[in-house]
Image (cartoon, rainbow, N blue to C red; front, side, top):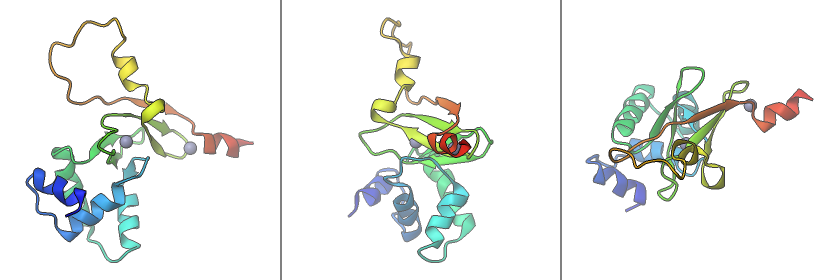
Length: 144
Ligand SMILES: [Zn+2]
Ligand SMILES: [Zn+2]
């Protein structure tokens, strides 16, 4: 069984073909994708029902199988970090709308949120959502 299939079972979901295809489209990307982008990727490999996609993304987000983020253009973006990446921030380009996952060395979120000398949180942290808005390198270089 693939790790995505295990992940679905752990969250009480049957690893159906549609669900596995959606997770496959999201795994290993370092960018948070719009539902319409995911649909396009899925349909490159065969037909895929739009309503199924939206419902499934909703169910995945509720179970934290994927992370859902609100972008600056008010549409949701979905990403699926590798298990060792966990929570991370995003860089949102206000020009092209790309939303890059900031993982590893690029991850500033926890540092911003938790300075070294901060007092302990009054509870257990479960999620952090930090979005950095700006203009991506690709857009900057197109500017000339
Ligand atoms: Zn850009
Ligand atoms: Zn992400």
